[in-house]
Image 1 (cartoon, one colour):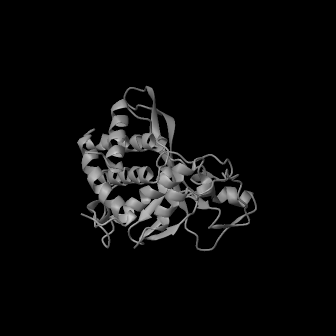
Image 2 (cartoon, rainbow, N blue to C red):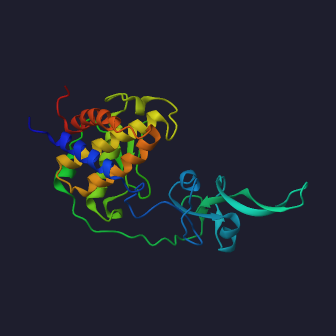
Image 3 (cartoon, helix red, strand yellow):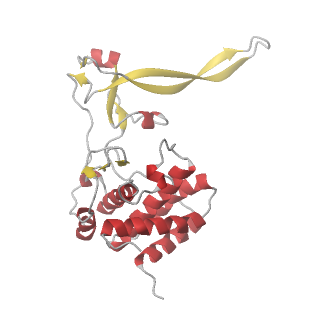
Length: 275
């Protein structure tokens, strides 16, 4: 029996997984949280604690002639500092980690009198017609916004945000990212009611969350296949999938299980009657 595009994509992803993969990807260029004064990106847990944008301490803002808006709440940034500490019993000096934190403000929304220092890198792309048609043809779709810095689906507001096309070096990666969030949105209770989306208080990286990420990336790869997008996105999808498989004990059978749910989600987006 001739394989359909979903089966072909699933087979290709499994082949890539068997070869080994590259790390986590973020294919857009702009956004993320950075220090306003140095333009250095915040790393580690701070990348998750802070929304995209430029941040400065109260002292930095004052010294630069800016002013924190009345009622603005600061954000915490944490960092580890290594210090010397003397053992009271042995008298020996050891180096120990010391956690410190400081407070910062988002200069674009919480500060007056400071201008952004960020030089955005943008690209000129024509839309990919077949992929654009899938996005625009999604019936009963959530709301869409296209703001730099973050790709996310919010079940609470039933809203997708993806960085705009101009933020991606490759147009194909824009659509792959968009499709990923669109597949997540099919799990909403008013659509396919998938546990990975409807379950309350799901923690980042737990089993329910990880399985939902497999479904979303499998579905994105399938939609890329349907729209004829370049095969390089398959390799990137495999890299992303492997990162979640590690938390699920490298069980490649889960890819096949996720593929079944991903196909159902893709069919929903494409308007194909569900079996």
